[in-house]
Image: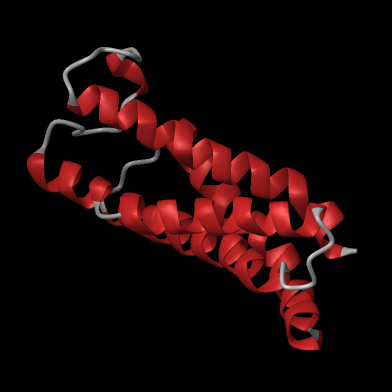
Length: 137
């Protein structure tokens, strides 16, 4: 079934977003938890910083929905496809918007592009199947 194949991608994305935002919060609090070279270009620019934090609410919604769907699936709850639909849809949005943003800025950092291409591409394999599963329930 679709969830068995999608589960590792969902976990990587959902846990990855929670870790990313936890690190971002620690940086916001003034702690140097990662080397400066790991931060995206112009990290200290207030507009770029605000743009980054504008993703926080949706990233948290997708992580909560993804983890909730995984829990429901593990319990055999047939309602798992509805919250699971957010898990690939919102990372696709986040990754695609980030790729567009960095393209407009002509910023091609492979580490940021790799992460955002992951967010953009994996959902494309699962969204159609998940939509069929959700409509069947």
